[in-house]
Length: 429
Image (cartoon, rainbow, N blue to C red; front, side, top):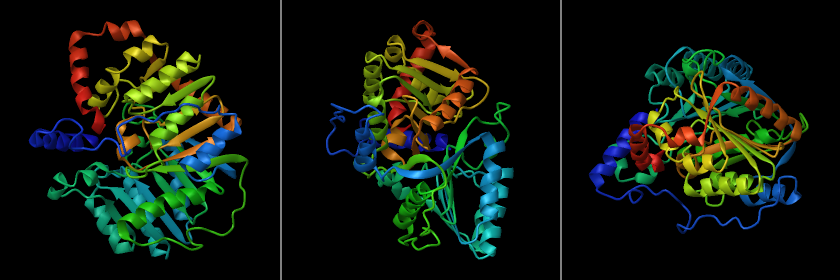
């Protein structure tokens, strides 16, 4: 997963003799100046919706049905059922695809679909899927599944730093252009079960029907075209029928390292700047830069309640937790509430603003998601849907320990030194 990648990054940095950030571009904006968010309308204001649909991404579309799936027991069965029922096309993109029971089931299902004549396209990240059993790939090829490993690593990538940095962190599945899935889950046994043991991670995924599925498909097609040159088009991928399936307003917001104004960071900053009552954040990797911290602090100055859930001791990347904790002081002192989830690894990625605006998907609150990775989030504007997500968030809070400013300030000196050192690697996290 990330460990091998960070090791490679560290070696390259040491060999290069470059200062931090000179080898790896941390921002694709034309200058190093931060975004200037001078005036942002409140969530309830129609201007906010127009900004999200016109400035940043595709329009917010009506008529969607979205089902919340909690943990592997609820997530994997409908995904596999959708693959088994596919008649025309399957597009699947994932950062993680490791060997194990669930990966075997997905491989079997994808191969069975290809044998039935379904056109199956798979994108796996070459870093995230480094633990895949090569037998799965051989079998996919034999069965007619078209797959590719996104930005495979080679010795010459030491020079091609942009390619080395850019990973696809998206989690997308679309079947027949009619039903889609996205969220935080990868294909690995760590997501099995119901977050009922340290071995089984806590995560949330979403099943989508309605016009927003077309935007989900477009996110996949964009990376497929970039990597292969082939255009996925036609009714098999984008059905003409746009029948409304529900009452939710939603958009699929995608970003990549060279997407300019289509920035995941800007989407988060605008959302938090629009808050007037509350911000709830759930993230597996919380390594905020100065601008994100300033935006949250300004929200507190406006009287906005801010609650953040992050992993506790059960985290797959210890260096990320240390780099995160080093940044908490000013936020805790300002009254931002930070909670560490205790039972297992917490892998959820969610933002809920003013009980109405929800962003869910693959993006974490760190530099990798904001500036380097290809990401995709599902944004929903609906009070009832937000209320459902808040109930889940509050249930997770019950399994957390809140970290106070006093606790943070008086943590052992050794921890402070290690955390300070870990921040050196923050830009690549």
